[in-house]
Structures are given as structure tokens and as C-alpha cells.
Length: 487
Image (cartoon, rainbow, N blue to C red):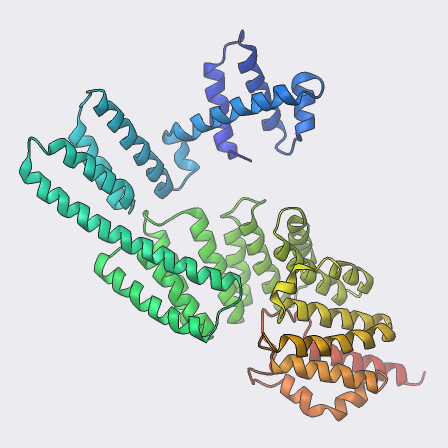
């Protein structure tokens, strides 16, 4: 949707004021808006039929072009009504840009009414909200205006420009550093090298913040410190900085947007899962969802956090993962869609719906890009499903393929010792004709390692291993014991 519901309402008011009944084109615009307001999910075919009685793509496309022009007018026609749509920070950015443009246009036409006073207000508000690009432009405009009548003011303005440019450049550097780190996080390629570089980046941003007192730089600095602590698994320290981040956002108009606040809450809830504080994670994930539109990706990322918190807290929460899966099936990117199909498949396996789980696994394709994690989880879950339905011939082939897969990816990716041990246990299970009790006794040392606190062997929360292997294995042992009890 190009506009929010509130902006559509503003557009409706604008049309009602400016449209005359005799203007057929404008009446069509009004009719188009009415159809959309009555049904936000309406299709193009339905719109054409409602407007023209039948398909009329040429006329419809022209109407859409005119509608987009009117939408642009609404977006640019800032008034107090739109402060409920945008955060103060974003509102003032667009407002000040527009105000400065209008002042410059008036100046070109020889209209200098309250020019100095208006520029002072723009400069003051731009500084307050840390919109330094607007502030610098306004300072240059003021400098040009006073150059012939107040030479003393020129030096003062020049110093303000230099200081503003310094802060702006440091803010741009902070953003650039954050983008570099975000690329590494999203591609799962963080390494020891980047951990060292992250420490250097934290040092740079800390110094920049101390020199400028820019809350925007503090915002990026806190995120880097949080990431640094999470890489080191210092989740308590990360929690401290996450709460500092939330406080920073809440108390600074120059930073706060609903989306930023929601994103910080998502990160807090995620960290609370790592701290095993599932109840708090559920609460904060739900609050975070309220910061986003229901059909947005971030809303469903918050839903994923809520799902995981509930799952680790002992609740299956199938409805949540099902909702996320179907959303990403039509709206998410290939990787997210594959990831949620896999998580949904895990839940179906837990429910005993193994065929449905296998169906979902056929949709898990784009995890090939993350070979050491989600693709490995997919292969292991497929083996578990095969064992559960008794398709042992297929299981044998999949276990042998898993062995080859681990050998292949170990040349380019780090493979955890846990994954290698699980593969060996599965291979032994095939050789012992799926006698779970016998394999457990013969490979007890392996299971001890899987249940240890050793970081190379232990199960990790928030890993693709949603179904903990040793717990599933012991469950199968109990099933075999029951079958052997004589009636």
C-alpha cells in the first residue's frame, strides 16, 4: 500500500474539497479511493470492473498515474495531521526540508519576510533533531543572506558550518560502520577477524560520541557494543546495553521512531531467550509486534522470537509459526521462507505429522547458502522423519549422504564436533539395525559429550536443532522398551 490508512483519510479529505462533480476524471479518482478504502485487498481486475464496468487497462493506468500525483501532493503537504503518522524525528526532517525549500523559493522571488527568523528556527530544530544536512543547508542560506550587511556574523556562521559538517561526517561514519557489520550479520560470515574489527569500531564510535555528544552516534555505538557482547556470549552485559539503548530511544526525539523502538525490543527479546528468560522474551516480543504493521516483515520477525520463546518455555505455539510461514510464502524472501518452512516442519514432526513435515521440507531450498546450519538441520530432520515412519532404506541412504555432505562442507565451512558425533551415532544406528538401546550403550561416551557443557558438543539455543537430538533418541529408546514388555 502506497499510503497508510491515516494518509488515505487525508487524501480523501483533499479530494472531497477539490473535486467538482462535473469533472469526470476527478470523480474517477474519488471513486478509486472509495473502492480502496472499502477493501484494502482489492485486486486490479476488481477495480477496473468497479470503475468502468469491464476491463479497461489503458484508462486505469492513466487514472493510477493521476492518483500517484495526488498521493505525492499529500505526502508533501505536511500539516499537524501527519504527526500521528510519522515520528517527530521523521516529521521534522520532511517539514524542515520543505520549509527551507519554500523560503529559498520566496527569496528568489524577492520576498524576504522574516527570513532571518525563519532560518533561525530551521537551524535550531535541525540541530535538536540532528538533521545536520538540513542545518548545513540553512546555515549556507543564512550566510549568503548576511554577506553584504553583517560581516561579523559570517565568521560565526562559518564555525557553525564547520562544526555541523564534523558531526554530520562522524554520524555518516557511524552509519557506514553499522552497515558493514549488518552485512556480516545477515550473511552469517562473522569471524575472529570481524570480532577484532568490531572492537576497533566500538572504540572509534565511543570517541566520536564523547567528542560530539551526538545521540545518533550513541545509538549505533550501543548496537555495536551489544553485538560484541553477544558474539562473546556475554548476554548479561548485552542486556545492560539493550536497556540503555531503549532508554536512549525513549528519551531523545532526535532518535525515536516506532520502528526503531520495536527493533530494539526485538533485540532485547532475542537476548532474553539466550538468557533463558522466556517469560520476559514473550512479553517484549508481543510489545515489539505492536510497533509494526501486521503485514510487515519486522512484525513476523517479532512473531518468530515470540514463537521460539514460547517453544523453549514448553509451549508448542504451532499457530504462530504457521502464521509466519504462510506470510513468508507470499511476502518473504527465499531464505526466510525456507527457514520458516523448516521450523514449521519441526513442529509437524513433534506433532507426529511426519508426512506433512516431509512435505514442508521439500520447500526448504534456499538454506543451501547457509550450509553449516539450516541445511544440516533439514537433512537431520528428514532422517528423523524417515526413522519415525519406518522408511529405513531411505534413512540409510540419507545418513550416507549426510556423511559425504559433512566431509564436503568441512573444507570451506566450520563444522561443529556435535554434528559429526550425531552423524556417527546415526551411522551406528543403521549398522545395529536401529536398536536404539544397544547404540546408546555402545556410544555412551558420545551421548555424554552431547549432554555436556562443552561448547563444541553441547546443544545451542536458537540453533536450527529445534528438536534436541539426544532427547529424541532417548524417547525412541523408551518406545522400544515398551514394545519389548510382554502383555
